[in-house]
Length: 355
Image (cartoon, rainbow, N blue to C red; front, side, top):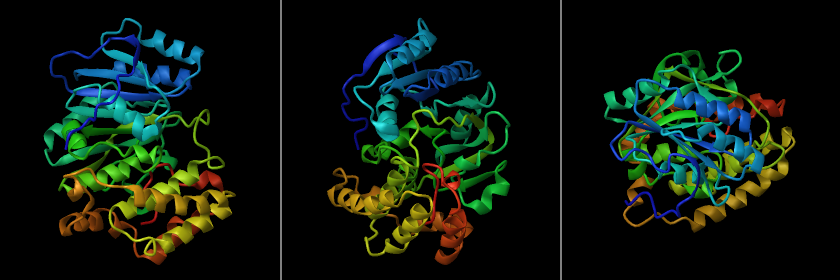
């Protein structure tokens, strides 16, 4: 597979016109869409990382002029950081694809623009985690509430039964987008993120392809980022977030061979959950949209194996995810029905919901 595809060059705004020509360890990528104050703090946190050779990339996807100017000032003259402006808002999946393609560090660390590294050596330890274990495709970080240091429960993307192990490490089938490190070679082998997802579940979709290739995903509770929960310019449950959550989850299952009929119990559970949280129309729209996406999807030539989970891959998923969730009835009860009372308890975007 050839990755990246020939993306058009984005507009260079400020900072270094290109990274160092020499080999370096890590690219840190940050997507920007307003939230200038938080983004500037995320940039400063990334540039302050020590013990690792890095380049920091900021890809703006449509910030207001005054906010773009603040980002430009934050990296003006910086030799280790670059601000570019994409031609439009490509969402999380497409935006990360395009900015990740600009660098050549052997590891890519994605940091949300409302998050910061927990310590000055967090990036170095994430790179070391991948360097020390050649079987890993990606490492997911522990996501903490910035203000308190407690676990950010809205960003817990793993089975609820594993929450008591938040400070430990375990193999997983996904990671949380707010802070994670990916081996660039594995990202390329898997073809990057699926642009069609736009927002939500793109990490899980990538991880399934990595697992299909025999790779592992590792959660590291000792490597953390601090996350600020900010409503500005975020997808709201009352807007399109639940639509993307349901549509993308069903689409991914169909990409990997599930039939629409087999997904009906999951879809009905999502409808119940959406109705109780005041967004029933989003769920109703999501089902047909997922079917249309799945019918239009065609693997690139030579990549068909990425979408076939063999016995080893299914065993990996069973051991590291399904076994922690229980049977279908229990999963619907604990992961859907038990969360009905309010929208605040809806799952995080990208969180591994009922399977």
